Amino acid sequence: MSISTMMDVENTNHRISPEIRRLERMKENRLTDRFKTVKSFDLNLLTTFEAVFIHRSGTKAADALGITPSAVSQALGRLRIHFNDALFLRDGKALAPTTVAIGIHEGLEDAYDNLIAKLQNISFDAVPTRLVVHCAAYVSMFTLNVMRRVLDEIAPECEIVHTMSHNSITEIEESLIFRKADIIFDMHSHVSHSRVSQQISSETPVVICRRQHPRIDDTLRLEQIPEEKFIYIDSESAVLLSNRIKVNSMMRENRVCRFISPSLLTNISMVESSDMLAIVPERFYEKMKNSFEVKALDVDFAIPSQPVYLIYNKSALNNQFFATLVKKMTDIFQEELRIEPVL
Image 1: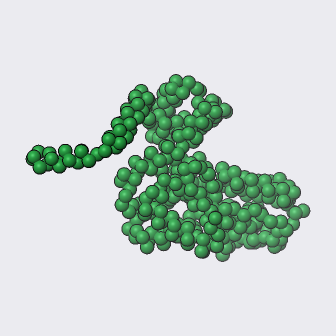
Image 2: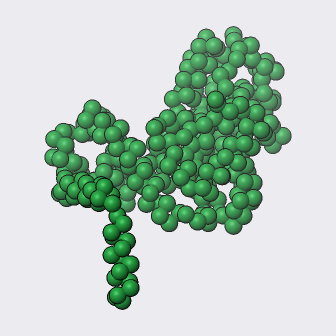
Image 3: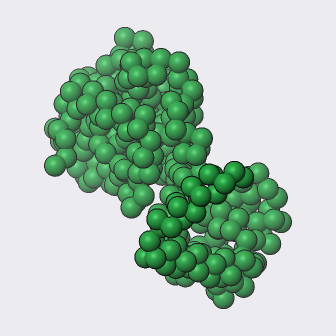
């Protein structure tokens, strides 16, 4: 090192105030203490804990993490010793979290999400070449085109990869926590401190049957309901299940269900080829009514509408590209779908 360089370093060090040096020493001491606290704790155990918490199953957690069930079992054993609690108890075929486990999950949720986000953002400063979107097939019909339009404007080389949830809340929770998807569109809001969940659409349901139904003309009357059988959409969403109960109450009957599927396309095919009835989104019916021998029925009761949400991890907004993408998509949804912004 040259004499001039040594003088520059000395002068630079001299300019650091005693207060700054004191703060740096405090930070160093604090980090050293934390290192001592966690030196005997494998932080990978937290990932295993979150996977078991989401899936309520050691086997499913192992599949999600790409490890063996034995490794999950060993990790849970170490966690139980560390926290001095059973953490998960057998409840039929599932593992139910104890109050301690629930507290750990809630306490770690934001910190764990931020840690993963920071790790991703280390290599995510530039415009990405690939974005993963997780949603059901029907929802993708009116959401992915909006995303594609925005990307055509701000990142025309970016690839969109669509993965399907099959209406599974568990799959979507896993995608959010383990960053398997950048954006999710779902009919369940997935409320969390670490996530943004904003409504982008409101789907109006209609009752449909085949055009040549032997008992129903253009109107479904309450007295006809006990004679008919219905098709249900399969979903873990509490909102959808709640709406199903409301519809039963409005119909004054518990509908007889003969077929359940997560696919609206499958359901409308079954309606066309049988005497069963189904409730589908009006937008879906309008797109498909000329391709299937089905018709929408008038009813004398109001079926609850179904919201659709745009969901992403809050920390992703730290990336300017992602923040711009979300803002532009939200503007289009508000304009085209006439969803008023929440104030």
